[in-house]
Image (cartoon, rainbow, N blue to C red):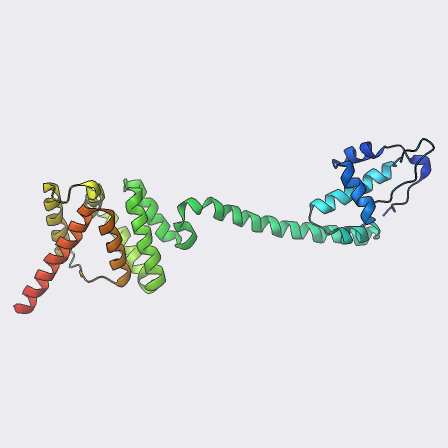
Length: 256
């Protein structure tokens, strides 16, 4: 490792020229002088300070190490180190940079996923279901409600997740179930007394009877149902009508 001592016979650069070779400002060069990283040459007969080519090399080393995040105190030690010690330190710095790159890459991936927040908290199998819904033409409002249900389920009842994932995919594999799901989504802006809603309620009720669905819902689904009711008067009427019919069936079953 060459030292920072200047050879007067090779002083050829002005401070502006020196700064330009390393892509820094004159102010930066003077700062390195001030902290002792780069020796400041004596003025020549004309009153100017002249720098050697070696000063340019040292300045580039200083700037490169500083840009890599190496503290100035360590840079000073490295500039005076033996070649083998310097090479080992550069290897360590490179490894640290590689780890930082991996970390930043992870941050970039998470930042890119912020617009679809489900990818931050839900397993890939659930994200695939939400994407499948989008592919079927389900509205983004309904997808968000579905996402909320999965997030609540994962927090409050995680053991049911695998079975729920299988059931959901099986439902979308069934044309009739998919038709009803899309019809419910379409009905969001209907008037709650639209005649089409009566037919839809009948179809949904028949589906629940056919699939022997238990109308009692865990707490997280009640929360989601509440949000659905707030989102659409038509959906509120569907939920209330289905709950009323299910209760009548239970009562009839107890009486029989």
